[in-house]
Image (cartoon, rainbow, N blue to C red; front, top):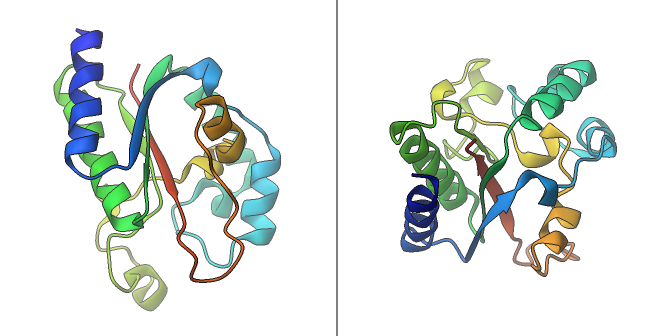
Length: 169
């Protein structure tokens, strides 16, 4: 089943508009606890459900949990909202295929204006997932492991790549 599921997820990601997608094994994912420092001291806002915004000890636990997976799919888009939509769709497909622990990691772009920032509550909590770096994942080194060219955005307004993933088994 997993080879069929892998093909299905890859095809769906590309069909929905991903620029790149790749099946990965966990040994290709680079974990680095320094990502939490960037979250705590470099992130201008952050999602209310982001593990690193809650507390660093929780973030370390989340990183250890992610290490229980053996493979997944990682994808690249230029649009945060599209990246989140594809990620949640792939997570759902993996779950419905019998992979009940399938879990997506993506930036939150559910709303045009964050309701949490305005009202103190999220109106789409079932669609919120943590981004990869909030799980202790070095996105740049991981992209390099996959042979992807990922560059730091140099100027505000320059196109940025959005990297998301679904951890499947």
